[in-house]
Length: 244
Ligand code: NAP
Image 1 (tube, rainbow, N blue to C red):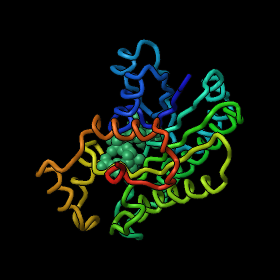
Image 2: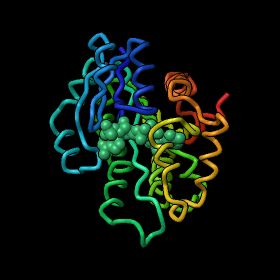
Image 3: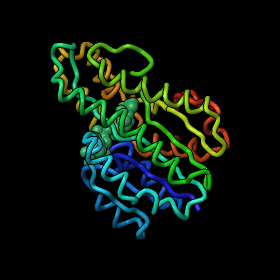
Image 4: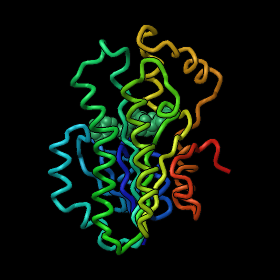
């Protein structure tokens, strides 16, 4: 049986990934601060939701030690982990970034993803296949002014995937995948950023105005197709727009 853990399943790309997996009758454990009652109601009991702030390292460690993940994975012969939850803030030059927001972003965007990958590997303990998909971004591969914290976090996910792939652990596949530009709350947040903090804002306004954003459902269809494909993990760092 295939089962999936999806972080940030409450809205945006994560909600669409969870919905796509559930439509394939794959049970999903969703982790986010808020829930997705509508999706839960339509999931025939296959969506389990956990309210968790992934920017709170102590809360995450407490939850990981509580055994919920291991119990969820116990009857899976393939466990999927989609590290999707992400925070854009803080945006701006170094001196404009509140240090507390830097710590929160680094915890949610990097530390939680890495800790969940480790915990998932321990939960399957060589008994089942593990596929880890980090939701990355072009911002981790190109330097975008104003996004030093966000971009550094995505670059960290990319390098984590490269290095875990180098471990070549039997039964473990990993890919850090840039999804393209997707019409979510995060994009609305990008377009609402003051120009002084984010000089490239006009490019994202134009993408929205010209229909250049993927819908969450279309993007999720590509993400899940890749996650379930035989080729998953062949390239530890990939861009959904470049996959054939
Ligand atoms: P979004 O609409 O802002 O949704 C973010 C999701 O992450 C929500 O479900 C949110 O749930 C969850 N999340 C945020 N902070 C959290 C926290 N502290 N603890 C637990 N969950 C948290 O963003 P999105 O556009 O769907 O982005 C999803 C992923 O795609 C992110 O990793 C983002 O970096 C990446 N990405 C997006 C784009 C794009 O164009 N949209 C492009 C490249 C990469 P709660 O608020 O309920 O906690």
